[in-house]
Length: 95
Length: 492
Image (cartoon, rainbow over all chains, first blue to last red; front, side):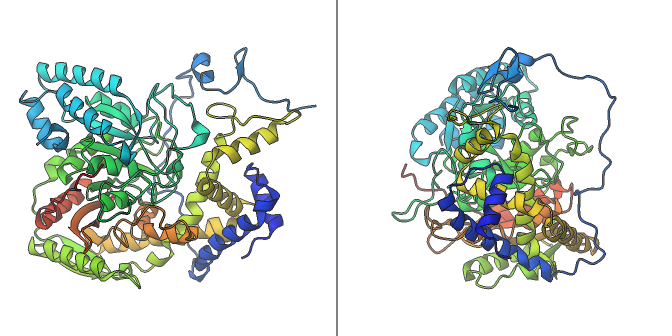
């Protein structure tokens, strides 16, 4: 499987990572090499095998559906690059 | 012997006997750290916190009945969130982040009276095998045989360097594909990756959630047993934390492995493996046989596919986990141009904040999870993972107690040596360790010898799930038989 520049641009956008146009061909080549390495998996007969979801079959823990934590708005906002009036601030999303 | 060179077990006994104080032990480590800037192991120093914790430990020791880790000075990998102390996974994107909470592992250690000296260097988001992807710059191996500076391995490279250079008595590491065991082997120390679910992941910055597991990096097997008992817990805040009581792992160290069956997997004999590694492996098997164990050839037929499966699964999980670094809630936000919207903010923040290896893995992960490729890559890799686990299940079902393999395909290499290599070459470092993460098993790296240049080499023991006590006991036998006492000659 070889990745084209257009596909590299698409995957960079899906990952929300800005990649300059002149870096796309190198990126496409590197991604292709890594995918090439993964092609070995096609040699394995996986007929009838269930994909592994966890190491041990265990039921996920459950608890009462009640509030256990909270009321710490200031601590939650403390590390934000831009927080105003009790909210995270971001550039305008809707025109 | 200086206090900072003590093992945990020695320090514990002398602290309890009031022969030494936690304050003096901490000061000895702080002074060793001050003189070891060239190793770039400690990247955030917390001497004030350490002194406060040491004084509290001394008070507790004076009152009697202090836990084993009370007063023991340790280093903490930068991947663990520590309250009020920078915790940035060696990434630019978490610049300035000071968590408002404490990870379960560090809280457990602090509850046991351990003293934190500071945060340790690592590969960015634990992605790397040489500690060269860190925003703090390379950590350096205290072992050195010529002019070249060597890698301490990765991703827990700072932890390994610090323990090997006697800057702290022990350190926390994390292991997603070998990140505790490979650096331990490269620096002549002991590293344990516990069974998945033994140690809580809460508050540990996530890389690949189904593979990540924290563990101790220590100078002896006994120390690993002591420290694991303090790190491990049943944690309601981690839904994958196992509901199994923490054992007294030190009590399992009887040194008796008579009648145990040791598996030697033939698929781990790789083409082009250095003869020294092969010889070391045979010596290790001989040591276990001499101790009364039975050594048996076994087959783990899907071994070859572990690395490609890992490099689908781990990046896939990383791409999801690292989606949270968007410049909104914590860490660094890129400077925006006039008119930039929220998408530009994400894209610039992540382009500036993530290094090249992290970007590559996030993009690979995004690709293998994207529509049209999910089944071909991700689901196929998860099926292969099931087969890898089945190989181990079958070996254990045949009565194998522990599996012996090399820890790494080589001794430590020079920093910069892999600069021109393609990413896949670096991934080959994990060839002997990555299967263990995929199967969720405990794995232990024990220093066993030196290569012809005089650099440490380790062997890996793989245990049954939840059988850390027995695994460590095998490690103790290997450690005793190997008699590895070499230390790096101080040059820093």
